[in-house]
Length: 191
Image 1 (tube, rainbow, N blue to C red):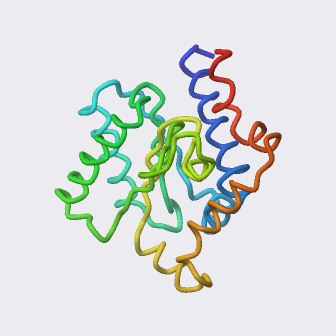
Image 2 (tube, rainbow, N blue to C red):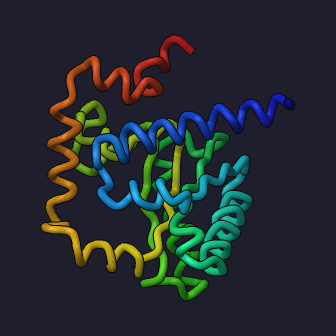
């Protein structure tokens, strides 16, 4: 097994652990469990080191979503381990992704949810626990089918309460739970 394969395996393992234990385990996304159970979530690791190459990888992932029935591929996580470590750079890159979606005439068809190890909501201090709702082991772009989301939201009571419920859930975690669920946030100094 090559070093890059082992590296990708470690990345996949970290992302799957986050997906299972944080996103699904804490019920931060009440819609993730079913596609995960049905193996309809694809994780794509982009080893791009330039914004142009990363945008090409995002386009490839969106094209695959566009050409694959939702019963086989519901959603895609584009994991970015080799760049955009800085949260501001990540945010600036999102403008490129939005422009790509607009250019391809996919507005109203696909949307992007964002996750980052240093995720920080506007107006919130970086160390505030509220940010844990969108913190992940790597920068991640979650490519979502809007039609699927709308269909699920119709049957979900009070979908507008999801963000507040998520904040309440992560803020109620004990320090021990945070260490277990977000080891990548607390082990940085030891790397």
